[in-house]
Amino acid sequence: MSSWNADSAGVTVAAFVKAHANIPNSLAKRHVTSGKVFVDGVCVTEVDHRLSVGQQVELRLAAPRPHDPEREGVLVYDDPHVVVIDKPVDVNSVPYEERETGTAMDLIRGAWRRQGKDATSVPLHIVHRIDRATSGLLMFAKSKRAEQGLAAQLRAHTIERQYLCVAHGAVKPGRIESYLVEDRGDGLRGSTSRIDQGKRAVTHVEVRQVMRNASLCAIRLETGKTHQIRIHLAEAGHPLVGETVYIRDFTGGLLTSSRLMLHAQTLGFEHPVTGARVQLSAEPPADFAAVLARLVAS
Image (cartoon, rainbow, N blue to C red; front, side, top):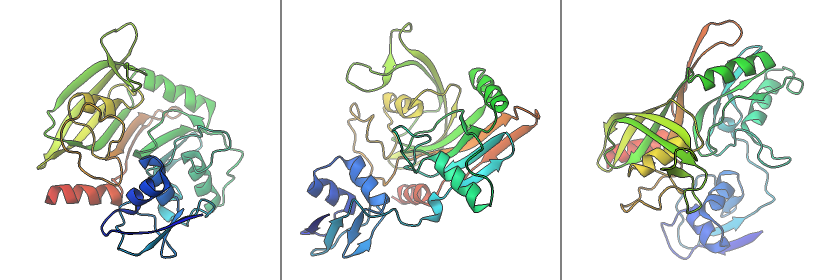
């Protein structure tokens, strides 16, 4: 356990932990949201909670994650073949490390247990993924037939996926197409002029509202490459609000946000077994709405 006293007022708890523990900002935020940070003995999970002079801040790495109903998994759709969860922010879609827990798959099984269902014998086949920093609709197949059918729709670009995002500046509506590579030459994913080396990515941008320093956009994915929306908007000069990775080329002032302002709002597909049209939506969570309201009022 590490402990420090705040010597200035107004600094956020995440920034304080980052500075005093000498850790990356992303890790400091994760410690806060996962219930590892205590202020005057009280667990604080809001990364933008502001400190007062003299308050004692403790980092307790062994502290258990606090009970949080918003992270327990809300199932938007569930039948014998397909399940869709409204994934909270800061939750991985699938495990990326051995024995990793707290993923969207774990939240689904937790929801099943609360419903009194068998949570262990039903397989969960990965269909697509959304970033850890992104909230919203995430789909898994529960049978091999469903997995194959949904994968075929993804390859044919017939699955409807619409996101809401807030980006810096006055975004122009339109279609963005480029070829993405894992390393554009500086260690970051990005676009390349070498078509033979990249993967084609197409993003459709609709502007819903222009604010003083940002734009609320609806994004429709034609393809679904890793970090596609984040890369395309950043390369267009409009990184997402809350972005911490694709900002090296941005010369404007970054707006503050406790989260990446990206939410998978709409998911539409043909049921892989029944053939019926399934159309789902999930409104942005409270933290997204709070940041948006602040930007609208500024």
